[in-house]
Amino acid sequence: MESPKKVITKNEAVSKIESYCAYQERSQKEVRYKLIDLGIYGEDLETIISDLIQQNFLNEERFAKAYALGKFRMKQWGKIKIRQGLKLKGVPEKLIQKALKQIDDDDYYQTLATLLDKKTLQTVAKNPIQNRYKLSQYATAKGYERDLIFEILRDKEL
Image (cartoon, rainbow, N blue to C red; front, side, top):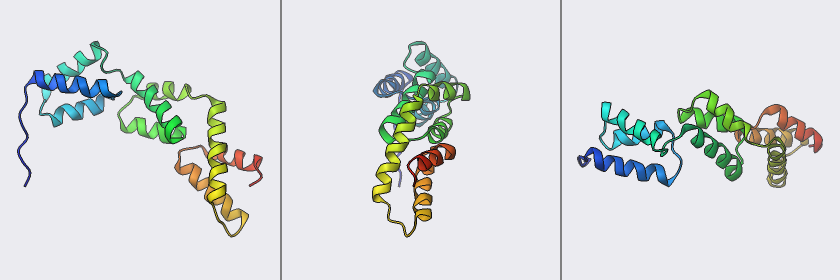
């Protein structure tokens, strides 16, 4: 049986949500869900969110840029997967485009080439066509564009 949630005051919620936002960049959607989870609704919720924006605890553009660079550098995600993740977080398309523009094209190409090199060493295929298929599926799942994947596979003669 679920235990009843403890009712907290607006001031306690503000304190908790400020800590939540200070810990790492958050989207407005994440903060909205967290406030609802804390039992804050309606006008209080909107007031808290607008206060967080004014106090610079909450900034969608900063969140989008941090998310895009973090996922690219740490998880080697491609732009397609990053775009999808940002959409799920409720980030507007204009900010998604801005965030993706900060990923350097040369770094992007080199990261994909390195990923494919590493995966080539791990992939055991019966023939070159099957090997190429496995590599392209892997890179597609990571969120890279198919044109770029096949360009690199051609360059590496895989």
